[in-house]
Length: 125
Image (cartoon, rainbow, N blue to C red; front, side, top):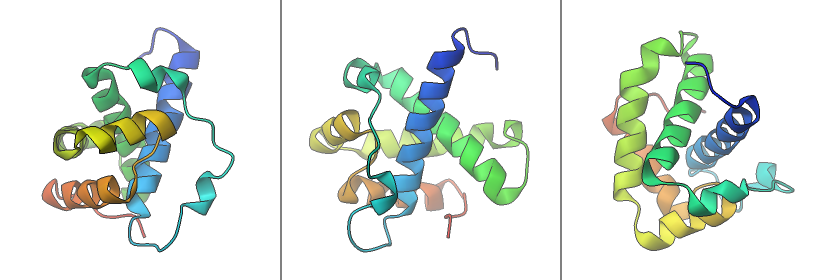
């Protein structure tokens, strides 16, 4: 898939990766130290639901491709499942927190991990 604006693509990738990393760190205690100093993409605050789904799906495909050592294309369906299921289960406060911070809060991370399991994707260690 070729993106129209390379900068937008990089921002989408960064935001999505950070949300997936945050979701995968749900089993670790305390705040996500690796995200200190991270500045969320301001476009998240006004992004459409389909844009948010695309961000999460793209982050999933990149992360899972590296984790499983497979092509990103092969992960389109399971990562689509993950993105749709995760965002569908978030309540308004969790979605607002994601829009503000660029990553999932603790309760949203738990839902994201459940979505990984439901969509038969391995959890990152």
